[in-house]
Amino acid sequence: MAEAIRFSSSGPLRLEAPALQCAGLRFAERLALWALRRTVMGMRHRHDEGAVLAATLSKVDASAAVAAIEGFAMCLHWRANPAAAIRAPGDPEVSRHEREILLALACRQLGRRTSVVAILGALTPEDRLPAAIDYLDRWADCFDKSGLHLPPRCPTKEAINVPSLVH
Image 1 (cartoon, rainbow, N blue to C red):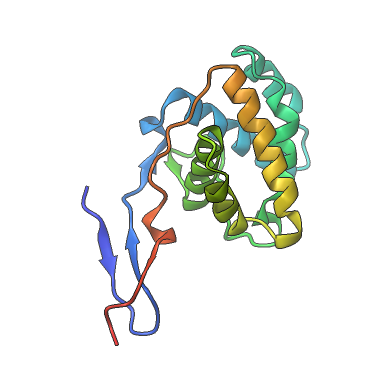
Image 2: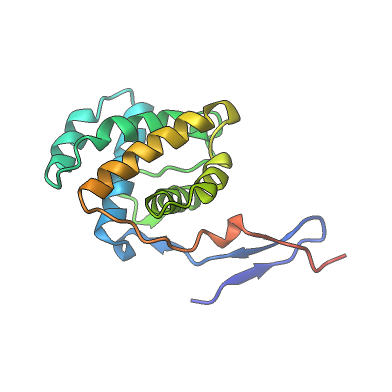
């Protein structure tokens, strides 16, 4: 699918990537996304999803990731900014913020700490950034130990600013 280009006379040119569907994700990505979505859903509805997460993640020897995922979700900017979209577990499309979180997790697994800081810096309040990084580190370590490796997909093009061509 081709990328769409938007021109703006008041700001930067932004490139938009086509929508990413959950069906197109690899197993580790789907599992990470499902776990994050279940956790955030539980927080929104004040329901503890820890037992469900632990039972599911234990099947791939990654149940130790539950505390890290829960801690990470608490750090996300969505609590202060509802536009930071974490969708429902059954939603077939991956939001921009979810893509960025999956990218941060993949970058962490590859040792690209600078990329992790840049990505999470846009998603979390400044005072929660160190904790978000710590929780993401622990989440990535648990997935690594279980052989669950996320591919470093291109971030959403919406997040990439290109100098405006319109003066």
